[in-house]
Image 1 (tube, helix red, strand yellow):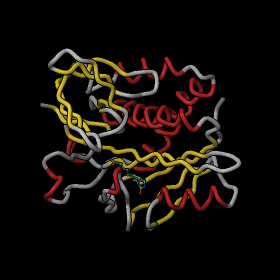
Image 2 (cartoon, protein in one colour; image 1 turned 120 degrees about the horizontal axis):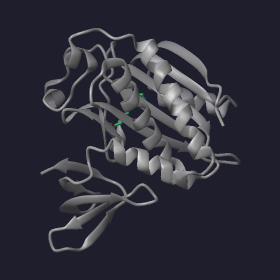
Image 3 (cartoon, rainbow, N blue to C red; image 1 turned 45 degrees about the vertical axis):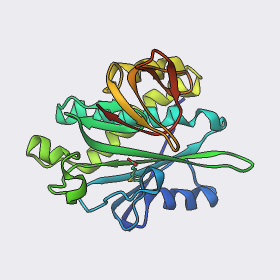
Length: 240
Ligand code: BTN
């Protein structure tokens, strides 16, 4: 199944996720909300997402009957961004668990998926992609990049957003058929995470081990130094 998304474009929003949420509450979903800049861009764990003009700030809203499966939508979004970067900028973008896209180890994209539940459930998949920005706040500048910084060229934000939606729709087809294995396999093909020794920080614990797999609920599987297998459901990971 393909979704015929309707695009809503804005100059400034507090957050495209918030706007997409308001639209859902008014009955509008299967929507793509895009803003040229955000005044309150949000990241995971209540972090701030730096949202100056030049980046892509976009949220996809859709009906998500099975709220347990929304993590796949985050994977699909990260894959769609990686495939688009490979195609349009010819850079080897990789996905980092659970929701980032990296180029040469630096973060170029973050994804924040939120859900709205009620009589019907909806997912808001927020994508922040650094495109034409040349500078970032000092606190993140050594671990962040943009297409402009990587290629020394400006890129067309609209064209990139359209390609992401096209790729998203292709992968969404597997999701709508509940072919989740295909999404995991595709994610593994583009993975920066698997095979690496990493530190995983969860809300109350830190683990060090090798990333050896992805479970069928999108959790990360680590083999700890003592040989124990540890599943990470939510958290941040760092290469060690
Ligand atoms: C993260 O890496 O923590 C996720 C960042 C997600 C940022 C995007 S920008 C578009 C959308 N609107 C928001 O407020 N956040 C997401």
